[in-house]
Amino acid sequence: MPEPTVRAVLLDLWDTLAWNEWPPFRDRVAERSGLSVERLRRALMQTLRLRNRGTYPDGAADWAAVFAAAGIDPVDQLGAEVAAMEADQLSRDAHLFDDSVPTLRRLRAAGLRTAVVSNCSHSTRPVVDRLLLAGEADAIVLSVEVGSVKPEPDIYRAALAELGAEAQQAVFVDDQVDYCRGAEEVGIRPYLIRRGRPTWDDQDPPDPAGFAVIASLQELPVGT
Image (cartoon, rainbow, N blue to C red; front, side, top):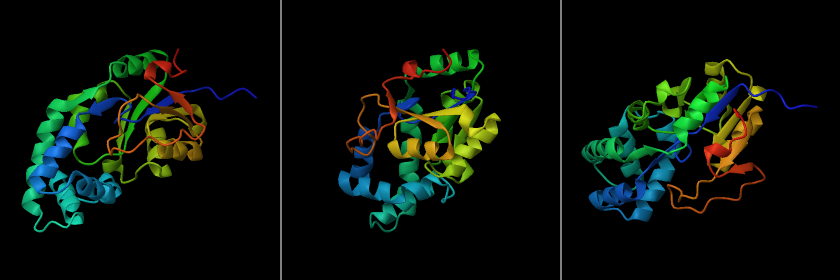
């Protein structure tokens, strides 16, 4: 049986379309807060889903939750200070990969609809705006705004609804195995991108678990 025609492409943001000079900033936050890098990393991971789901009202509250998880008290002033530091850092040090915009334009030129689908906190919307991604993709679906995080099905379904596409008509690109698995469970064909960069949380990338692997967006076999 032939594979269904691809009509939509969902693409992750961080480490798929864009990258951030995270380690130097993380080290600055650790120094400012008096935490070790490892303790900060654990607190970030402990609060990750809550921050990405939009549980807290803004970036200052996101960081306050991180510092509370690390055992710091009080946290409000520190959270606000670090949120301002983060906004400044992201205004300078978040970048698109060289193949991102050309790929988005290639896909659109081929008649495909595209969506950026990101697990992210409040700090990411200004980055999306600065990088002008809303003009390059048909939809921007941020977990912090829709209240669902990958690999939960609702965030993929929200993107499909924005594009007017069925799951079997879509493909998905992400650097995380679990998020590729979540897309597959919804019925979307996933591609795992491995750009050869360190992961943001300093962990070794997991086994690709049988997913199709690409090293760049230029290798994505749709829209050609």
